[in-house]
Length: 242
Length: 212
Image (cartoon, rainbow over all chains, first blue to last red; front, side):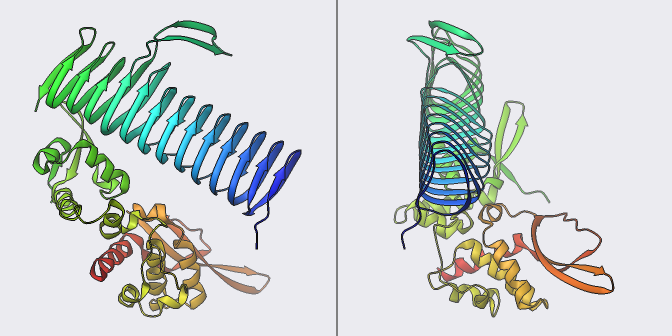
């Protein structure tokens, strides 16, 4: 039997359950655990329970009160997940807050990403701002810094943090209109990888095989087993070859 | 005696693996989260591991990685990390865990790791004198606890009983609880069956190891 599709376009509330496509374009709420093929929220949606879906798209405002498990997650609005988010592919160009951890195969963010625990992915690509409380672990970490980002630790194979070189314009409700060159920065407790390239980063310790410390970095201690290059506009307090 | 530990740097040096591999194996669950111990040293934060465990595990992974995929290795070495993606045939495993357990949750397509542990808990309750419906309560509760079973330290599954006495009638209501010790119940309730999930996870892992 085909599963039921649900669409809330005014204001409405449905119970949890196993559905086909769930669309919320008005103000909608799902009470209970939800299983669906596809969930699309373009208005304001609240899901009060765990969610399992093949595809989730949030372009309005979405709130999930518990764990979310999906093959593909796309957020371009404002979205909050109060549990853990597990996604095959995670793309975010809006504002995304995850209270638990994010685990995915592919993460691409150009918005604002905030994660309360760890981020685990094969690939992590960011051209936005992020704040990760725990460990960011990925085979490949590619970051173009915009604004001030923070992370507890970074660990992986290839880690590349690039400073923001171009012209940028920021419009924010609280801070008004800002325009300028550069300004992107990252703070981390530690960075560990086989190939590490950092710019505009402050870290207590960096460990790696091939390490390049670029302009704008302030690093407490670098431990490297292969080679180390330090840019003249970078500061490294202690260098240890091991 | 405390276990001998080894720093992450030493692990890489001793085994020849890279940071990339270590982090990848951790993400996959091949190296349990609980083995990573963060400690402050004179040179800043460092991560340490229980030496024998980590070196043993890396040797196992290295000897298998030619012919097995990462996912296959997870199923063999860290069945608790497979979540709902992998299933096992119950026959061989469950006979060792407890007679009659299979009847508590009948499936023909194979069982997930959490379900095997749940059945082991149910079987233990049965042999401890619980009745069938109490054991089923326990199984139904534990089988969805994949996350907890990845790190089962101190976790227990209980069957308890609440006695209600109202207007001369006495009713006893059984219920199941999964929690980490110490578990507190109210004064009207008492625990009738207690299964240590950490032990059961270990036991099921060993059985799965023998089955392969």
